[in-house]
Image (cartoon, rainbow, N blue to C red; front, side):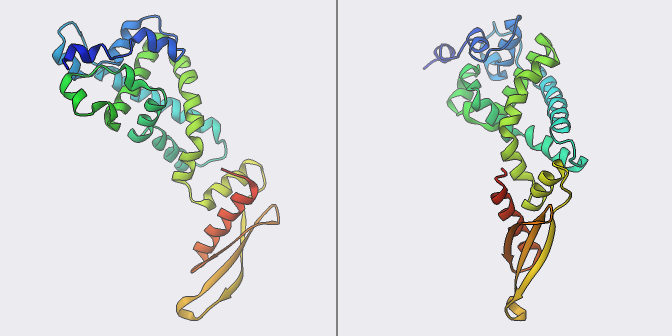
Length: 236
């Protein structure tokens, strides 16, 4: 297989634009976003790789993810908002977005990079996604970026919250968003010998028992009670 035959396997920029419903008027920008430096090294007709667009897309994604988190979770403290933004724009998550959109079908790679499995590497796919966002920003502005990215952020919301929060934080976020105050925990039973005690805890939401849990210390029991409450309340 030659480098040129590899090229025939790439989805065109115009096809990608149609498939994803993107608003590109300047398809050369999108084509540049899809072009890895390894392809430029092997094709003299390819004027520029996507690294500058990747830089711009990284900045745009940081802003859009931060603004979305700020609006989506109005009662969440700054520290947790920062964690959410970081989780949404990390390499692994951006690579997931790229795979969801099948962006790798349109990625232009050089022969060596292609044969070494470049299309499946998270680092390369996350850079590709950032480059596409950078190109979209230049072509159509920040509003177009938000319209394209926010549905992806919404889809990732539950998994990201689960990743960065323990059950107690998730439960507190839910109750505070509904003006129910913070959950309250009460140890209702302590059993076992001193070297192997077990604690049973209830958690209260709006002064009603929402969940129960057991653990070898009060913190573990509270986490278990919060997880039980999340399940009972149908959260997550």
